[in-house]
Length: 546
Ligand code: NAD
Image (tube, rainbow, N blue to C red; front, side, top):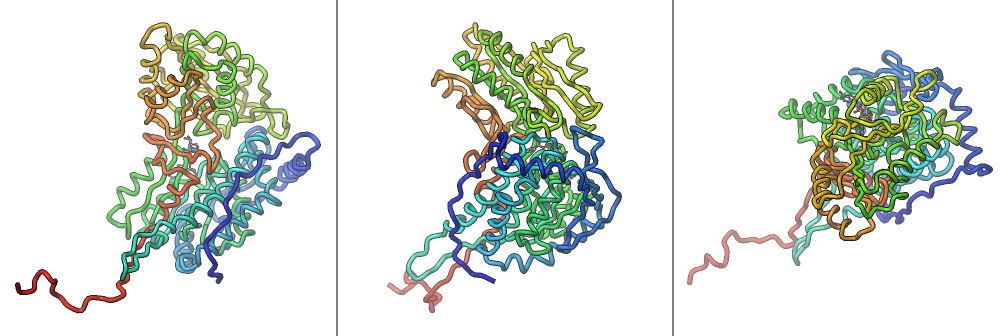
Protein backbone atom coordinates (compact mmCIF):
# COMPACT_ATOMS: atom_id res chain seq x y z
CA UNK A 1 0.00 0.00 0.00
CA UNK A 2 1.40 3.43 -0.91
CA UNK A 3 1.51 6.08 1.81
CA UNK A 4 2.12 9.16 -0.28
CA UNK A 5 1.58 12.87 0.28
CA UNK A 6 -2.02 13.93 -0.33
CA UNK A 7 -1.24 16.87 -2.62
CA UNK A 8 -3.09 16.47 -5.88
CA UNK A 9 -2.92 18.53 -9.07
CA UNK A 10 -5.16 21.59 -9.35
CA UNK A 11 -7.86 20.45 -11.77
CA UNK A 12 -9.16 22.34 -14.78
CA UNK A 13 -12.51 21.69 -16.43
CA UNK A 14 -12.44 19.07 -19.16
CA UNK A 15 -12.67 20.81 -22.56
CA UNK A 16 -15.88 20.16 -24.53
CA UNK A 17 -15.02 18.53 -27.86
CA UNK A 18 -16.77 19.93 -30.95
CA UNK A 19 -17.75 16.80 -32.92
CA UNK A 20 -17.71 18.98 -36.03
CA UNK A 21 -17.77 17.13 -39.37
CA UNK A 22 -14.30 15.74 -40.08
CA UNK A 23 -13.18 15.76 -36.41
CA UNK A 24 -11.61 12.55 -35.05
CA UNK A 25 -13.97 12.50 -32.06
CA UNK A 26 -16.97 12.48 -34.42
CA UNK A 27 -15.65 9.42 -36.24
CA UNK A 28 -14.92 7.60 -32.95
CA UNK A 29 -18.35 8.38 -31.55
CA UNK A 30 -20.17 7.32 -34.74
CA UNK A 31 -18.34 4.01 -34.66
CA UNK A 32 -19.12 3.49 -30.93
CA UNK A 33 -22.80 4.25 -31.60
CA UNK A 34 -22.95 1.73 -34.44
CA UNK A 35 -21.34 -1.09 -32.48
CA UNK A 36 -23.16 -0.42 -29.19
CA UNK A 37 -26.56 -0.53 -30.91
CA UNK A 38 -25.82 -4.19 -31.73
CA UNK A 39 -24.09 -5.33 -28.52
CA UNK A 40 -27.11 -5.90 -26.32
CA UNK A 41 -25.27 -6.89 -23.12
CA UNK A 42 -26.86 -8.98 -20.40
CA UNK A 43 -26.05 -6.48 -17.63
CA UNK A 44 -24.82 -8.05 -14.38
CA UNK A 45 -25.12 -6.86 -10.80
CA UNK A 46 -21.59 -6.49 -9.47
CA UNK A 47 -21.24 -7.48 -5.83
CA UNK A 48 -17.84 -8.02 -4.18
CA UNK A 49 -16.36 -7.67 -7.66
CA UNK A 50 -18.35 -10.67 -8.92
CA UNK A 51 -20.98 -10.55 -11.63
CA UNK A 52 -24.39 -12.15 -11.14
CA UNK A 53 -27.64 -12.10 -13.06
CA UNK A 54 -30.38 -12.98 -10.60
CA UNK A 55 -33.89 -11.66 -10.85
CA UNK A 56 -36.57 -11.12 -13.46
CA UNK A 57 -35.31 -9.39 -16.57
CA UNK A 58 -36.19 -5.99 -17.97
CA UNK A 59 -35.07 -4.43 -21.24
CA UNK A 60 -33.38 -1.11 -21.87
CA UNK A 61 -34.62 0.40 -25.13
CA UNK A 62 -33.59 3.49 -27.07
CA UNK A 63 -36.21 6.18 -26.27
CA UNK A 64 -35.98 7.62 -29.80
CA UNK A 65 -36.30 4.17 -31.40
CA UNK A 66 -38.21 2.05 -28.92
CA UNK A 67 -38.00 -1.08 -31.04
CA UNK A 68 -34.24 -1.07 -30.48
CA UNK A 69 -33.33 -3.19 -27.44
CA UNK A 70 -29.97 -2.06 -26.07
CA UNK A 71 -29.50 -4.28 -23.04
CA UNK A 72 -31.15 -6.80 -20.76
CA UNK A 73 -31.00 -6.18 -17.01
CA UNK A 74 -32.13 -8.00 -13.92
CA UNK A 75 -34.25 -6.89 -11.02
CA UNK A 76 -31.94 -7.70 -8.13
CA UNK A 77 -34.49 -7.38 -5.34
CA UNK A 78 -33.89 -7.96 -1.65
CA UNK A 79 -31.60 -10.96 -2.12
CA UNK A 80 -28.95 -9.20 -4.18
CA UNK A 81 -29.32 -6.05 -2.08
CA UNK A 82 -28.55 -8.05 1.08
CA UNK A 83 -25.49 -9.58 -0.57
CA UNK A 84 -24.37 -6.13 -1.70
CA UNK A 85 -24.62 -4.78 1.86
CA UNK A 86 -22.63 -7.73 3.21
CA UNK A 87 -19.96 -7.29 0.52
CA UNK A 88 -19.70 -3.58 1.25
CA UNK A 89 -19.31 -4.18 4.98
CA UNK A 90 -16.64 -6.85 4.31
CA UNK A 91 -14.68 -4.40 2.18
CA UNK A 92 -15.08 -1.52 4.65
CA UNK A 93 -12.09 -2.09 7.00
CA UNK A 94 -9.60 -2.50 4.15
CA UNK A 95 -10.88 0.49 2.21
CA UNK A 96 -11.02 2.71 5.29
CA UNK A 97 -7.41 1.78 6.06
CA UNK A 98 -6.30 2.59 2.49
CA UNK A 99 -4.50 5.95 2.55
CA UNK A 100 -6.41 8.79 0.92
CA UNK A 101 -3.69 9.28 -1.67
CA UNK A 102 -4.09 5.73 -2.86
CA UNK A 103 -7.88 5.90 -2.96
CA UNK A 104 -7.62 9.14 -4.89
CA UNK A 105 -5.46 7.51 -7.55
CA UNK A 106 -8.28 5.12 -8.47
CA UNK A 107 -10.59 8.04 -9.27
CA UNK A 108 -7.85 10.06 -10.96
CA UNK A 109 -7.21 7.10 -13.21
CA UNK A 110 -10.95 6.73 -13.87
CA UNK A 111 -11.00 10.40 -14.95
CA UNK A 112 -8.12 9.93 -17.37
CA UNK A 113 -9.59 6.72 -18.82
CA UNK A 114 -12.87 8.55 -19.35
CA UNK A 115 -11.14 11.54 -20.92
CA UNK A 116 -9.37 9.15 -23.30
CA UNK A 117 -10.29 5.63 -24.37
CA UNK A 118 -13.62 5.41 -22.51
CA UNK A 119 -15.02 8.77 -23.60
CA UNK A 120 -17.01 7.55 -26.59
CA UNK A 121 -18.20 4.41 -24.77
CA UNK A 122 -19.93 6.51 -22.10
CA UNK A 123 -21.09 9.09 -24.64
CA UNK A 124 -22.59 6.43 -26.94
CA UNK A 125 -24.32 4.66 -24.03
CA UNK A 126 -25.80 7.95 -22.83
CA UNK A 127 -26.97 8.94 -26.31
CA UNK A 128 -28.56 5.57 -27.07
CA UNK A 129 -29.96 4.76 -23.63
CA UNK A 130 -31.07 8.21 -22.50
CA UNK A 131 -31.64 9.89 -25.89
CA UNK A 132 -29.14 12.69 -25.38
CA UNK A 133 -27.81 14.56 -28.37
CA UNK A 134 -24.07 14.53 -28.95
CA UNK A 135 -23.64 17.92 -27.26
CA UNK A 136 -25.75 16.93 -24.24
CA UNK A 137 -23.95 13.60 -23.87
CA UNK A 138 -20.50 15.20 -24.16
CA UNK A 139 -21.21 17.79 -21.44
CA UNK A 140 -22.67 15.11 -19.17
CA UNK A 141 -21.10 11.66 -19.63
CA UNK A 142 -17.68 12.99 -20.59
CA UNK A 143 -16.96 16.49 -19.23
CA UNK A 144 -19.10 16.69 -16.09
CA UNK A 145 -18.27 13.14 -15.04
CA UNK A 146 -14.52 13.73 -15.55
CA UNK A 147 -14.79 17.01 -13.65
CA UNK A 148 -16.56 15.34 -10.72
CA UNK A 149 -13.79 12.76 -10.48
CA UNK A 150 -10.91 15.24 -10.74
CA UNK A 151 -12.36 18.07 -8.65
CA UNK A 152 -13.61 15.81 -5.86
CA UNK A 153 -10.08 14.45 -5.44
CA UNK A 154 -8.69 17.99 -5.24
CA UNK A 155 -11.43 19.22 -2.87
CA UNK A 156 -11.15 16.14 -0.63
CA UNK A 157 -7.37 16.43 -0.42
CA UNK A 158 -7.77 19.91 1.08
CA UNK A 159 -10.38 19.01 3.67
CA UNK A 160 -7.73 17.80 6.12
CA UNK A 161 -5.96 21.19 5.94
CA UNK A 162 -8.49 22.61 8.39
CA UNK A 163 -6.82 21.58 11.65
CA UNK A 164 -7.57 22.81 15.16
CA UNK A 165 -5.02 24.99 16.97
CA UNK A 166 -2.47 23.39 19.29
CA UNK A 167 -1.02 25.53 22.09
CA UNK A 168 2.52 24.66 23.26
CA UNK A 169 2.54 21.35 25.07
CA UNK A 170 -0.41 19.86 23.18
CA UNK A 171 -1.13 18.52 19.74
CA UNK A 172 -4.71 18.56 18.45
CA UNK A 173 -5.49 16.77 15.23
CA UNK A 174 -8.69 16.30 13.31
CA UNK A 175 -9.03 13.26 11.12
CA UNK A 176 -11.81 12.55 8.65
CA UNK A 177 -13.05 9.04 9.17
CA UNK A 178 -15.43 7.32 6.78
CA UNK A 179 -18.95 6.80 8.12
CA UNK A 180 -19.43 3.59 10.08
CA UNK A 181 -21.47 1.29 7.87
CA UNK A 182 -22.45 1.56 4.20
CA UNK A 183 -23.91 4.33 2.04
CA UNK A 184 -26.85 3.72 -0.28
CA UNK A 185 -26.44 5.71 -3.53
CA UNK A 186 -29.67 5.97 -5.56
CA UNK A 187 -29.21 7.72 -8.90
CA UNK A 188 -31.51 9.25 -11.55
CA UNK A 189 -31.88 8.48 -15.23
CA UNK A 190 -31.07 11.89 -16.55
CA UNK A 191 -27.36 12.37 -15.87
CA UNK A 192 -24.63 9.79 -16.35
CA UNK A 193 -22.30 12.14 -14.46
CA UNK A 194 -24.58 12.23 -11.41
CA UNK A 195 -24.97 8.46 -11.51
CA UNK A 196 -21.18 8.17 -11.43
CA UNK A 197 -20.66 10.91 -8.86
CA UNK A 198 -22.99 9.76 -6.11
CA UNK A 199 -21.21 6.46 -5.35
CA UNK A 200 -17.68 7.75 -6.06
CA UNK A 201 -17.91 10.90 -3.91
CA UNK A 202 -18.68 8.64 -0.93
CA UNK A 203 -16.08 6.01 -1.85
CA UNK A 204 -13.34 8.65 -2.22
CA UNK A 205 -13.80 9.54 1.45
CA UNK A 206 -13.31 5.88 2.37
CA UNK A 207 -16.93 4.74 2.47
CA UNK A 208 -18.36 1.57 0.98
CA UNK A 209 -21.43 1.80 -1.21
CA UNK A 210 -24.49 -0.02 -2.48
CA UNK A 211 -25.34 1.71 -5.77
CA UNK A 212 -28.83 1.49 -7.29
CA UNK A 213 -28.91 3.12 -10.75
CA UNK A 214 -32.16 4.13 -12.46
CA UNK A 215 -33.58 1.43 -14.72
CA UNK A 216 -33.52 3.75 -17.73
CA UNK A 217 -29.86 4.59 -17.18
CA UNK A 218 -28.75 0.97 -16.83
CA UNK A 219 -26.76 0.87 -20.08
CA UNK A 220 -24.52 3.80 -19.13
CA UNK A 221 -24.38 2.55 -15.51
CA UNK A 222 -23.11 -0.81 -16.77
CA UNK A 223 -20.26 0.84 -18.66
CA UNK A 224 -19.60 3.15 -15.69
CA UNK A 225 -19.11 0.17 -13.37
CA UNK A 226 -16.75 -1.38 -15.94
CA UNK A 227 -14.84 1.92 -15.99
CA UNK A 228 -14.45 1.87 -12.18
CA UNK A 229 -13.12 -1.69 -12.37
CA UNK A 230 -10.70 -0.74 -15.14
CA UNK A 231 -9.48 2.10 -12.93
CA UNK A 232 -8.61 -0.38 -10.18
CA UNK A 233 -11.49 0.04 -7.73
CA UNK A 234 -11.14 -2.85 -5.25
CA UNK A 235 -13.99 -5.40 -5.10
CA UNK A 236 -16.80 -4.59 -2.65
CA UNK A 237 -16.17 -0.83 -2.41
CA UNK A 238 -19.00 0.00 -4.84
CA UNK A 239 -21.57 -2.75 -5.35
CA UNK A 240 -24.12 -2.16 -8.09
CA UNK A 241 -27.61 -3.66 -7.90
CA UNK A 242 -30.15 -3.02 -10.68
CA UNK A 243 -33.91 -3.05 -10.49
CA UNK A 244 -36.86 -1.82 -8.49
CA UNK A 245 -35.67 0.99 -6.24
CA UNK A 246 -38.35 0.58 -3.58
CA UNK A 247 -37.41 -3.06 -2.86
CA UNK A 248 -33.66 -2.49 -2.85
CA UNK A 249 -34.07 0.64 -0.72
CA UNK A 250 -36.31 -1.16 1.79
CA UNK A 251 -33.60 -3.76 2.38
CA UNK A 252 -31.03 -1.03 2.98
CA UNK A 253 -33.36 1.10 5.12
CA UNK A 254 -33.96 -1.81 7.46
CA UNK A 255 -30.24 -2.54 7.89
CA UNK A 256 -28.59 -1.46 11.13
CA UNK A 257 -25.42 -0.39 9.31
CA UNK A 258 -27.06 2.13 6.98
CA UNK A 259 -24.76 5.13 7.43
CA UNK A 260 -26.01 7.44 4.70
CA UNK A 261 -28.13 7.94 1.60
CA UNK A 262 -26.78 9.82 -1.41
CA UNK A 263 -29.79 10.44 -3.61
CA UNK A 264 -30.68 12.38 -6.72
CA UNK A 265 -34.13 12.01 -8.22
CA UNK A 266 -37.68 13.07 -7.57
CA UNK A 267 -38.84 14.83 -4.41
CA UNK A 268 -41.45 12.13 -3.78
CA UNK A 269 -38.92 9.30 -3.70
CA UNK A 270 -36.47 11.25 -1.53
CA UNK A 271 -39.24 11.97 0.95
CA UNK A 272 -40.11 8.26 1.04
CA UNK A 273 -36.47 7.41 1.80
CA UNK A 274 -36.33 10.03 4.56
CA UNK A 275 -39.58 8.63 5.98
CA UNK A 276 -38.06 5.13 5.88
CA UNK A 277 -35.06 6.35 7.86
CA UNK A 278 -37.39 7.97 10.38
CA UNK A 279 -39.33 4.75 10.82
CA UNK A 280 -36.13 2.78 11.46
CA UNK A 281 -34.26 5.44 13.41
CA UNK A 282 -34.02 3.49 16.66
CA UNK A 283 -32.43 0.53 14.88
CA UNK A 284 -29.40 2.21 13.38
CA UNK A 285 -25.90 2.11 14.77
CA UNK A 286 -25.48 5.81 13.87
CA UNK A 287 -27.69 8.57 12.45
CA UNK A 288 -27.65 8.14 8.66
CA UNK A 289 -26.53 11.17 6.66
CA UNK A 290 -29.27 12.13 4.21
CA UNK A 291 -28.23 14.00 1.09
CA UNK A 292 -30.81 14.43 -1.65
CA UNK A 293 -30.99 16.67 -4.69
CA UNK A 294 -34.48 16.53 -6.10
CA UNK A 295 -37.01 18.33 -8.30
CA UNK A 296 -37.23 21.85 -9.60
CA UNK A 297 -39.63 24.37 -11.10
CA UNK A 298 -36.97 26.64 -12.40
CA UNK A 299 -37.83 30.21 -13.31
CA UNK A 300 -36.70 32.86 -15.72
CA UNK A 301 -37.50 36.41 -14.67
CA UNK A 302 -37.20 39.15 -17.27
CA UNK A 303 -36.99 42.74 -16.15
CA UNK A 304 -38.29 45.35 -18.63
CA UNK A 305 -34.62 46.22 -19.29
CA UNK A 306 -33.80 42.65 -20.47
CA UNK A 307 -32.02 42.06 -23.76
CA UNK A 308 -34.65 40.35 -25.89
CA UNK A 309 -32.57 38.09 -28.12
CA UNK A 310 -30.41 36.79 -25.24
CA UNK A 311 -33.58 36.10 -23.28
CA UNK A 312 -35.22 34.23 -26.16
CA UNK A 313 -32.16 32.02 -26.74
CA UNK A 314 -31.87 31.26 -23.01
CA UNK A 315 -35.55 30.29 -22.85
CA UNK A 316 -35.22 27.90 -25.79
CA UNK A 317 -31.97 26.28 -24.69
CA UNK A 318 -33.00 26.26 -21.03
CA UNK A 319 -36.44 24.75 -21.62
CA UNK A 320 -35.97 22.30 -24.46
CA UNK A 321 -32.45 20.87 -24.47
CA UNK A 322 -32.53 17.23 -23.38
CA UNK A 323 -36.29 17.52 -23.84
CA UNK A 324 -36.67 19.53 -20.64
CA UNK A 325 -35.58 16.55 -18.54
CA UNK A 326 -33.08 18.47 -16.45
CA UNK A 327 -33.83 19.28 -12.84
CA UNK A 328 -32.63 22.79 -13.76
CA UNK A 329 -34.72 23.18 -16.96
CA UNK A 330 -36.45 26.52 -17.43
CA UNK A 331 -40.11 25.67 -16.97
CA UNK A 332 -41.77 28.93 -15.95
CA UNK A 333 -40.98 32.37 -17.32
CA UNK A 334 -42.20 35.77 -16.16
CA UNK A 335 -41.99 38.28 -19.01
CA UNK A 336 -43.05 41.97 -18.97
CA UNK A 337 -45.93 42.90 -21.22
CA UNK A 338 -43.79 45.55 -22.90
CA UNK A 339 -41.34 42.89 -24.18
CA UNK A 340 -43.64 39.92 -24.65
CA UNK A 341 -44.60 40.33 -28.35
CA UNK A 342 -40.97 40.43 -29.47
CA UNK A 343 -39.83 37.71 -27.05
CA UNK A 344 -42.74 35.47 -28.04
CA UNK A 345 -42.11 35.84 -31.78
CA UNK A 346 -38.41 35.09 -31.40
CA UNK A 347 -39.01 32.04 -29.17
CA UNK A 348 -41.63 30.66 -31.55
CA UNK A 349 -39.26 31.18 -34.51
CA UNK A 350 -36.45 29.36 -32.67
CA UNK A 351 -38.83 26.50 -31.78
CA UNK A 352 -39.91 26.22 -35.42
CA UNK A 353 -36.25 25.68 -36.34
CA UNK A 354 -35.67 22.88 -33.79
CA UNK A 355 -34.95 19.50 -35.36
CA UNK A 356 -36.09 16.54 -33.23
CA UNK A 357 -35.46 12.86 -33.83
CA UNK A 358 -32.95 10.03 -33.53
CA UNK A 359 -29.92 11.37 -31.67
CA UNK A 360 -27.61 9.43 -33.98
CA UNK A 361 -28.44 12.13 -36.52
CA UNK A 362 -26.24 14.89 -35.11
CA UNK A 363 -28.39 17.64 -36.67
CA UNK A 364 -31.12 17.10 -34.08
CA UNK A 365 -31.34 19.47 -31.12
CA UNK A 366 -33.88 17.26 -29.33
CA UNK A 367 -34.31 13.51 -28.86
CA UNK A 368 -37.13 11.63 -27.17
CA UNK A 369 -38.29 11.58 -23.54
CA UNK A 370 -37.06 8.68 -21.48
CA UNK A 371 -39.88 6.12 -21.65
CA UNK A 372 -43.54 5.41 -22.33
CA UNK A 373 -44.56 6.34 -18.79
CA UNK A 374 -42.98 9.79 -19.15
CA UNK A 375 -44.54 10.25 -22.60
CA UNK A 376 -48.01 9.28 -21.36
CA UNK A 377 -47.78 11.61 -18.37
CA UNK A 378 -46.54 14.51 -20.51
CA UNK A 379 -49.09 13.84 -23.22
CA UNK A 380 -51.87 14.04 -20.61
CA UNK A 381 -50.52 17.50 -19.71
CA UNK A 382 -50.42 18.41 -23.39
CA UNK A 383 -54.06 17.39 -23.87
CA UNK A 384 -55.10 19.20 -20.69
CA UNK A 385 -53.38 22.41 -21.81
CA UNK A 386 -54.86 22.20 -25.32
CA UNK A 387 -58.33 22.01 -23.79
CA UNK A 388 -57.76 24.70 -21.18
CA UNK A 389 -59.57 27.90 -22.17
CA UNK A 390 -57.42 29.92 -19.77
CA UNK A 391 -54.18 29.25 -21.67
CA UNK A 392 -52.84 30.08 -25.13
CA UNK A 393 -50.89 27.35 -26.91
CA UNK A 394 -48.13 29.05 -28.90
CA UNK A 395 -46.08 26.05 -30.06
CA UNK A 396 -46.56 22.29 -29.71
CA UNK A 397 -45.53 20.53 -32.91
CA UNK A 398 -44.00 17.06 -33.07
CA UNK A 399 -45.80 14.98 -30.43
CA UNK A 400 -45.72 11.36 -31.53
CA UNK A 401 -45.20 7.91 -30.05
CA UNK A 402 -44.87 5.77 -33.18
CA UNK A 403 -41.13 5.30 -33.46
CA UNK A 404 -39.92 6.97 -30.28
CA UNK A 405 -41.27 8.87 -27.28
CA UNK A 406 -41.26 12.30 -28.90
CA UNK A 407 -42.69 15.37 -27.17
CA UNK A 408 -42.42 18.52 -29.24
CA UNK A 409 -41.13 21.76 -27.77
CA UNK A 410 -44.24 23.31 -26.23
CA UNK A 411 -44.78 26.97 -25.34
CA UNK A 412 -47.84 27.99 -23.37
CA UNK A 413 -48.98 31.40 -22.19
CA UNK A 414 -51.03 31.20 -19.00
CA UNK A 415 -53.23 34.00 -17.72
CA UNK A 416 -53.44 32.83 -14.11
CA UNK A 417 -50.24 33.21 -12.07
CA UNK A 418 -51.30 30.25 -9.92
CA UNK A 419 -51.86 27.87 -12.84
CA UNK A 420 -50.60 24.36 -12.02
CA UNK A 421 -48.22 24.63 -14.98
CA UNK A 422 -46.27 27.25 -13.02
CA UNK A 423 -46.19 25.20 -9.82
CA UNK A 424 -45.61 21.53 -10.61
CA UNK A 425 -42.52 19.91 -12.05
CA UNK A 426 -43.46 18.43 -15.46
CA UNK A 427 -39.99 17.22 -16.42
CA UNK A 428 -40.56 17.60 -20.12
CA UNK A 429 -40.23 20.20 -22.89
CA UNK A 430 -43.11 22.41 -21.77
CA UNK A 431 -42.48 26.07 -20.90
CA UNK A 432 -45.21 28.10 -19.20
CA UNK A 433 -45.10 31.88 -19.56
CA UNK A 434 -46.86 34.39 -17.36
CA UNK A 435 -46.93 37.90 -18.81
CA UNK A 436 -46.85 40.50 -16.06
CA UNK A 437 -48.00 44.07 -16.20
CA UNK A 438 -44.91 46.27 -16.13
CA UNK A 439 -47.11 49.28 -16.83
CA UNK A 440 -48.14 49.53 -13.19
CA UNK A 441 -45.65 50.81 -10.58
CA UNK A 442 -45.66 47.63 -8.48
CA UNK A 443 -45.41 45.32 -11.54
CA UNK A 444 -41.85 44.09 -10.94
CA UNK A 445 -42.30 43.97 -7.18
CA UNK A 446 -45.45 41.86 -7.48
CA UNK A 447 -43.93 39.41 -9.92
CA UNK A 448 -40.84 38.87 -7.78
CA UNK A 449 -43.15 37.88 -4.90
CA UNK A 450 -45.04 35.56 -7.23
CA UNK A 451 -41.85 33.85 -8.38
CA UNK A 452 -40.75 33.37 -4.78
CA UNK A 453 -44.05 31.89 -3.60
CA UNK A 454 -45.63 30.06 -6.53
CA UNK A 455 -43.78 26.75 -6.41
CA UNK A 456 -42.50 24.58 -3.53
CA UNK A 457 -39.13 24.15 -5.27
CA UNK A 458 -36.02 26.33 -5.07
CA UNK A 459 -33.42 24.81 -7.37
CA UNK A 460 -32.39 27.20 -10.17
CA UNK A 461 -33.52 30.49 -11.60
CA UNK A 462 -32.41 33.20 -13.98
CA UNK A 463 -32.68 36.97 -13.97
CA UNK A 464 -32.48 38.89 -17.24
CA UNK A 465 -31.88 42.63 -16.98
CA UNK A 466 -29.52 45.26 -18.34
CA UNK A 467 -30.32 47.67 -15.50
CA UNK A 468 -27.84 46.92 -12.66
CA UNK A 469 -30.27 48.18 -10.02
CA UNK A 470 -32.92 45.80 -11.28
CA UNK A 471 -30.43 42.92 -11.10
CA UNK A 472 -29.58 43.80 -7.50
CA UNK A 473 -33.26 44.00 -6.48
CA UNK A 474 -34.10 40.64 -8.08
CA UNK A 475 -31.06 38.89 -6.63
CA UNK A 476 -31.96 40.13 -3.14
CA UNK A 477 -35.68 39.40 -3.38
CA UNK A 478 -35.12 35.89 -4.77
CA UNK A 479 -32.50 34.93 -2.19
CA UNK A 480 -34.28 31.76 -1.03
CA UNK A 481 -35.95 30.99 -4.37
CA UNK A 482 -32.97 29.18 -5.94
CA UNK A 483 -29.76 27.48 -4.84
CA UNK A 484 -28.24 28.34 -8.21
CA UNK A 485 -29.12 31.73 -9.66
CA UNK A 486 -28.00 32.97 -13.07
CA UNK A 487 -27.80 36.56 -14.26
CA UNK A 488 -28.35 36.99 -17.99
CA UNK A 489 -27.86 33.28 -18.60
CA UNK A 490 -30.08 30.21 -18.84
CA UNK A 491 -30.76 28.37 -15.55
CA UNK A 492 -29.18 25.10 -16.76
CA UNK A 493 -25.63 23.92 -17.38
CA UNK A 494 -23.86 24.17 -13.99
CA UNK A 495 -20.17 23.31 -14.30
CA UNK A 496 -18.29 21.42 -11.58
CA UNK A 497 -15.91 23.73 -9.71
CA UNK A 498 -17.61 26.81 -11.19
CA UNK A 499 -21.23 26.61 -10.01
CA UNK A 500 -21.53 24.01 -7.20
CA UNK A 501 -25.03 22.68 -7.67
CA UNK A 502 -28.12 22.17 -5.50
CA UNK A 503 -31.23 23.84 -4.17
CA UNK A 504 -33.28 24.29 -1.04
CA UNK A 505 -36.95 24.02 -0.07
CA UNK A 506 -38.49 20.93 -1.78
CA UNK A 507 -35.50 20.74 -4.17
CA UNK A 508 -33.22 19.03 -1.70
CA UNK A 509 -30.72 19.31 1.09
CA UNK A 510 -28.55 21.70 -0.96
CA UNK A 511 -25.30 19.92 -0.26
CA UNK A 512 -23.79 21.12 -3.55
CA UNK A 513 -22.62 18.16 -5.62
CA UNK A 514 -19.04 18.48 -6.77
CA UNK A 515 -17.88 20.62 -3.86
CA UNK A 516 -16.28 20.34 -0.45
CA UNK A 517 -19.73 20.89 1.13
CA UNK A 518 -20.92 17.60 -0.29
CA UNK A 519 -17.76 15.66 0.50
CA UNK A 520 -17.87 16.68 4.15
CA UNK A 521 -21.20 14.88 4.51
CA UNK A 522 -19.40 11.58 3.88
CA UNK A 523 -16.86 12.02 6.64
CA UNK A 524 -17.15 11.69 10.39
CA UNK A 525 -14.47 13.83 12.03
CA UNK A 526 -12.49 12.58 15.01
CA UNK A 527 -10.41 14.92 17.11
CA UNK A 528 -7.40 13.59 18.97
CA UNK A 529 -5.71 15.64 21.71
CA UNK A 530 -2.25 14.62 22.85
CA UNK A 531 -0.76 16.15 26.00
CA UNK A 532 3.04 15.96 25.95
CA UNK A 533 3.67 16.54 29.67
CA UNK A 534 0.58 15.44 31.61
CA UNK A 535 -0.09 17.08 35.03
CA UNK A 536 0.99 15.07 38.05
CA UNK A 537 -1.12 16.78 40.73
CA UNK A 538 -4.88 16.82 41.25
CA UNK A 539 -5.14 20.23 42.93
CA UNK A 540 -4.97 23.69 41.33
CA UNK A 541 -2.85 26.68 42.48
CA UNK A 542 -5.98 28.55 43.58
CA UNK A 543 -6.58 25.86 46.19
CA UNK A 544 -3.25 26.47 48.00
CA UNK A 545 -3.28 27.94 51.53
CA UNK A 546 -2.97 31.82 51.72
P1 NAD B 1 -36.98 9.05 -9.66
O1 NAD B 1 -37.16 9.64 -8.32
O2 NAD B 1 -38.14 8.43 -10.33
O3 NAD B 1 -35.85 7.92 -9.61
C1 NAD B 1 -34.59 8.17 -9.03
C2 NAD B 1 -34.03 6.87 -8.51
O4 NAD B 1 -34.84 6.42 -7.43
C3 NAD B 1 -34.01 5.75 -9.53
O5 NAD B 1 -32.85 4.99 -9.35
C4 NAD B 1 -35.24 4.95 -9.17
O6 NAD B 1 -35.16 3.60 -9.57
C5 NAD B 1 -35.22 5.07 -7.68
N1 NAD B 1 -36.53 4.85 -7.05
C6 NAD B 1 -37.76 4.97 -7.59
N2 NAD B 1 -38.71 4.72 -6.67
C7 NAD B 1 -38.06 4.44 -5.52
C8 NAD B 1 -38.48 4.12 -4.22
N3 NAD B 1 -39.77 4.03 -3.90
N4 NAD B 1 -37.53 3.92 -3.28
C9 NAD B 1 -36.22 4.04 -3.57
N5 NAD B 1 -35.77 4.33 -4.80
C10 NAD B 1 -36.67 4.53 -5.76
O7 NAD B 1 -36.30 10.20 -10.57
P2 NAD B 1 -35.86 10.12 -12.10
O8 NAD B 1 -37.07 10.06 -12.95
O9 NAD B 1 -34.81 9.10 -12.31
O10 NAD B 1 -35.15 11.54 -12.25
C11 NAD B 1 -35.88 12.70 -12.45
C12 NAD B 1 -36.01 13.48 -11.17
O11 NAD B 1 -34.72 13.74 -10.65
C13 NAD B 1 -36.63 14.86 -11.39
O12 NAD B 1 -37.52 15.15 -10.35
C14 NAD B 1 -35.42 15.79 -11.36
O13 NAD B 1 -35.73 17.11 -11.01
C15 NAD B 1 -34.56 15.11 -10.36
N6 NAD B 1 -33.15 15.48 -10.50
C16 NAD B 1 -32.63 16.37 -9.62
C17 NAD B 1 -31.32 16.77 -9.73
C18 NAD B 1 -30.73 17.77 -8.76
O14 NAD B 1 -29.51 17.91 -8.72
N7 NAD B 1 -31.54 18.47 -8.00
C19 NAD B 1 -30.52 16.26 -10.77
C20 NAD B 1 -31.09 15.33 -11.64
C21 NAD B 1 -32.41 14.95 -11.49
